[in-house]
Amino acid sequence: MWNCWHVTRNLIRIAALVNGQPSHAVDVSDRGLLYGDGVFETLAVRAGQPCLWSAHMERLRLGADRLGIPAPDAGILRREADRLLAGSEIGVLRVTLTRGAGGRGYWPPPGLTPTRILALYPSTTDVSAAGSVSSSRLTLCRTRLSENRQLAGIKHLNRLEQVLARSEWQDPDIIDGVMLDGHERVICGTMTNLFLLDERGLSTPDLTHCGVQGTVRALVLKHARALGITLDVRTLQVADLIRAKAVFVTNAVLGVVPVAAFDGTRYDPGAMPEPLRRLIQQVRRAALTVETAE
Image (cartoon, rainbow, N blue to C red; front, side, top):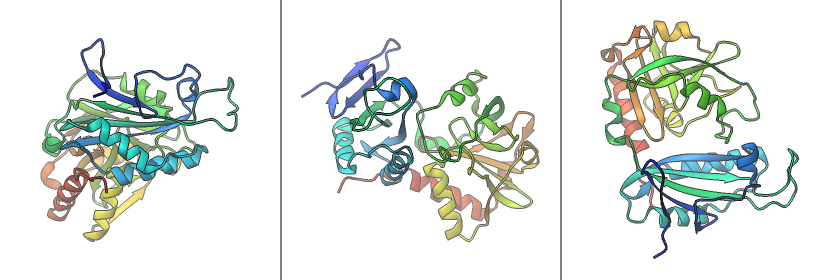
């Protein structure tokens, strides 16, 4: 059997496929490496299968279309994912698509063959227990997010703002940092979407100008409507986080995580009404649903 595993200097075993072949290298002229010219998805793996596969592939396709990159056939990606995940029970799968290799300069030459990279990482988080975290805190980041409607919502490869923001703290109890845009509006965490409960009900930031529309965020919106819970997508400020009764964050690896505090503000987990608790539980179960290949 072919060997796609690689052990890094930090003894982290990573399995990878580049264009369907076991490899840990890409062409030095790849535009994803040179210019961040591409998109990616990060999926939780449970029982050897990727969670929310269809939702992630739809966002990958949307991002590729937005950038003008031909999206690979979903069936090819799924077959490669199944090969990579064979024998693995739990982990994190990253699917990366770049415009491909070739051409110096920002102008993308026509006819490039996109590069697809699938990499399997060991999971550092017990996804099934993510919703029970009681000491998770948020902090406010100094780094601001740039506004660009063309890139808003998709998960493009340009993550330098998130890298700079994440370097601002080392406290392991801080689960994420809250990022604002240039107008001081709350947008998201460095790796999560935000939801807050206050006297107006449940709210999440408007991502029209920047930020990533997470797959679990979409589940919250969907299930809230199904349960008749009012959920406003609106402009939020730091003051709204300070006044909130409860806050939770979401992403594809963590699922749904209640937040205990935001800097000096502490939240009351008991403030969530029963319908909202049911919403969180339904979303957690849905986020961890294994989708098998057809």
